[in-house]
Length: 308
Image 1 (cartoon, one colour):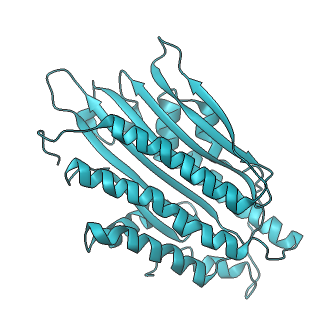
Image 2 (cartoon, rainbow, N blue to C red; image 1 turned 60 degrees about the vertical axis):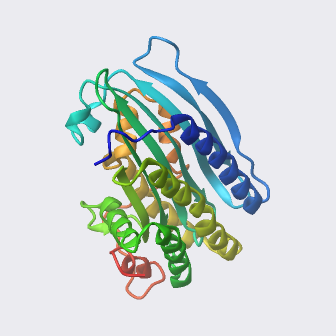
């Protein structure tokens, strides 16, 4: 647990997150070549149970990306939603601030994976008590037609992000990612994993903050080379239909299991920004099974944790 004597710098975290949103948007616009992020600045009116605001940025119908968003939010509340107090009962009765950058990119081409990343900071305060704070975040990759080269690159970047912070960090946060992005009702992982961490406060504040920064910036190095490598690959309607079918798993996870989505909706967050992660198109098919030996069947060999 954190030391009560540690100084925390909320404004420094906020300024980094605003800059990270800019940096990621610039990198994704560059790789797309056509699409741009449209920005909407939003805020909560005084008197609502959840105050604050944010910058929602969404790209639609780009050359590479069918739809995606890179959001910054900084919200404040007078009491914690049930989804949070169930996880951390000591937060009951505390006012809080939560800020972060969250993104999901859904490419046109089925050979380009969907990607997700999130970095966040949380602090809960109560008069006469030390603040409770932590960092969280990570990035994960969801291919439809997986390539070993791409998955290995993704995890190599993840390892390089973690190395300066300890020999065990990658293994721990890779395992956490595999376990978090898991759909029990399907008995499969959402993709090939990456990094996931939450409740990070066991190091000094500055070290925790530095790790969160490394993860946020590492997403660009992990994802952009994969997009550049695959976005011109030819595909047919068969691959497109499989992509839409597998996008259904993304919807299932985000609406049933994702803690961030539940927190946002239960705390009265901005619905349009919270559900920005949904794909523009998806489909479901009863009792679908890919043909043995098909290109589609190869994906299912990757939907279980493995060493990289």
